[in-house]
Image (cartoon, rainbow, N blue to C red):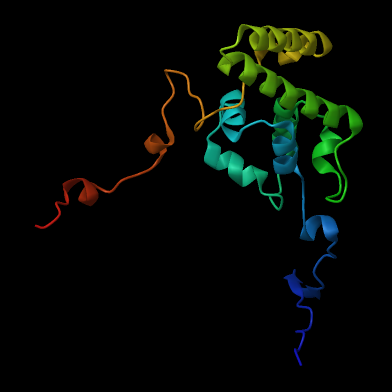
Length: 179
C-alpha cells in the first residue's frame, strides 16, 4: 500500500498557506506546437531560419510542457500560419478544417514539386507543372514551396551542416590510436 504524503504548506510572512490549486493546464500539456508543425510539413530547420533562432531552443519551446510567453506563441503562430487557438487547443482535438486543408495542400505541393524536379519524362514533367500552377492558383503562398528532400535536408551554399553545432574536445583532436 502506497502512502500519499500530506499536502505541504508554503510559508508567507510567517503564516502557513496551502499551495495554489493546480489544474490540467498547469500540470500537463501547455500547447501543441510540435504536432501542428509536423502536420503542416514544416521542418524545424525551416522554422529556425524564419525565426532566426537556434534549433536547440526551438526544440525546447516545442516541448508540450514548456510554459512559453505569449510573444513566443505569436512567433510560432506567424511562422506556422495558423490561428493561435490551433496551438492551444486540447490534445484530443484535431486541426480546424481550413488549417487541415492548408496542411494537405502544402504536402500536395511538395509532392508535385518533387515529381517536377525528379522526373525525366517530358509528359510527366508537364502534368506536374500544370498541377503546381493549379495549386498556386488555389493558394498563392505555395509558390515558394520546394519538393520533398530525397536525402537529408537541403542547405543553401552559405549554411553549415549540423556537424558545426557539435562540440569536440581538444583531447579528441590530439588523441592518436595506439599511442
